[in-house]
Length: 456
Image (cartoon, rainbow, N blue to C red; front, top):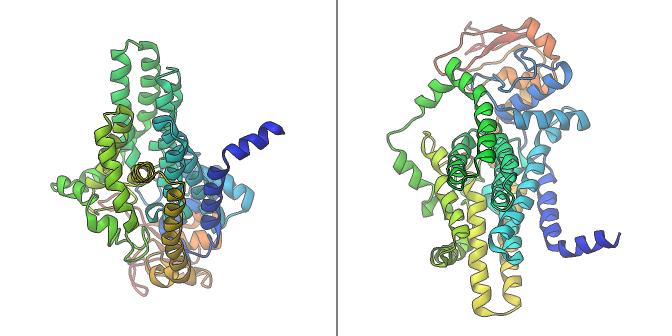
């Protein structure tokens, strides 16, 4: 009991950060956003299908890739939703709760990672605090986005990677977590192999052959299903289709001052309309933090910059840019740099009050953001979250619904909790299009033509 009390006291500030995170994410999580987006509906229904039948909506038993609309969703978040639905039932709370829990894991993991890098508890605490309240991470960590699962696993993978330089067999755990990250979100399918490639070369150079070989086997084995997916299905063609000759331009857009401090991501599902990705106050601390890291000649701190330079790559090679979700790794890294900048201010002023003043300033910025989110987000972003389909399918149990703008069948399945066996036995399908998307022409007493009154 005494050890538990001491542990709580020594980590009280981190517990407070985590508590603030949980309260602000869970409050009205089912009501704001007001409805589920089609990807959320797909995740929720496929999890429900697995929970009740052991198969996805296409009849595949416990798949590693969920076909969904033809874009093949990744398994980690969906299977966590299966567990959440088992406990809480098939509802929006159960769908979004895993994002909150993965967000919490990210905050704790970031604290341990920064503590390992800097050996300074204050910087580690500020990093987690800033990350927990940044606008960049806020919406993603309270909605059913797969990216948050990938981010959490990636952060922990980096942490155990650092530990592996002291105890080499931690590399195996790190590799497993990296694999988990790229089975959570597509951005980490690019980032994780890049980092592991450097690590394997380093371990080979250090003549640590055994651990490097075992880790490489784990990685290569895990990539076999990915190869089959891109070789046999539509994934590869879609990846090539979104390639861009403007990769360099796209890359630097993710660092633009306008994007970071003025307009932010213009997709209302990713950010509150006209809200920047960071707070204006971050600009000062980011500059100070960057200057300190560059001058430090500390390889551990250079790791932060290296990861930051890699983070926008998944967004840069796609058409929508800048893209807060695909470059989500930037969010915790920028929080670390800001925290280092705050430490520079604190050391120069050498006053106990400086840290408290900074915390109060950030809480004022976050308080305004959070109040605005609760009061106005649904009014300004409901259309982007396809609220109309919630209204339709909570009232309409049969008939014709146009699929001109979305995949209405998935909302019908989600909001009506349709028996997966009934759906499979009664559905009719449209041909798969050039992008690999499959559409449902109808099931049961529903039909989904382009325009009601006409046939597809």
